[in-house]
Length: 321
Image 1: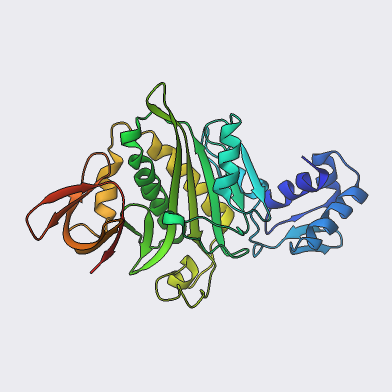
Image 2 (image 1 turned 120 degrees about the horizontal axis):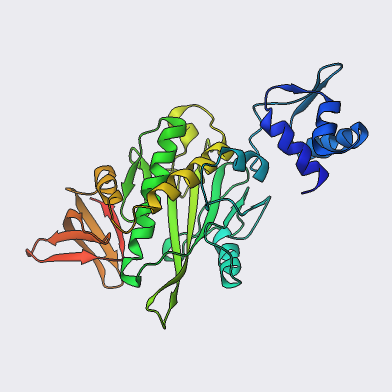
């Protein structure tokens, strides 16, 4: 950890409070002059840090930069987020997490970025990822699950994200199968799970769970403005992205403990905004309407077509009619 990062950790721990330069110098093992230089570097990066004679330095509570120093102190996890890389910019957190997994990254390794230049959504779509507005994170998992049960990972993540958002902001969240979190009738968050299969063992070698969550946005590009929303737009208040990132990891690790007994599926069904609704299903074979009648024990969407035929869907895009 650099001297600047050590100073940042102290200021984050005492956010909104005054800490003397000498106290910081003692705790991080540097001179007061070095502390001043580190504070100057942080200010140059955009942090608002006040300095008052005889009172020391104070980091404004309005700062909302993602950092390891702001995220890790709020973790209650054993594995998730304990190895974490935080970037100012990246092409795709999923791409980077995948490269880490291929070189043996441990279960729970997490990648977070302030912005994505090539954010990934489902079906090859881009995910809008502007600087400083959202949470763009990917988590490396090494679950002992069969390929048939891989849908459960996305479903489990969706429940955890919805719970974390409510815990931090109070916003009621619904889940649109299989990977979207909604507030009212607009999309708040998308989840993309990519996996590598161990052919010899017939199970998953690793899974990358990518989460893109709109937090501070107050507007969206014209092409998605009618379908996207953010926590700030829904609640008219700002929440700490670092705190929310930590809470997502806390909730996800707790829910992952129930992935084999599938008890989290009850909460997934309770939060569903499609069960009992008329939906349009789009796949490679075209589009067709059906009634959504439930979600089965491995996360598949159960639908009934007008012909009376019932199917369990593992893929495809749906929308409410």
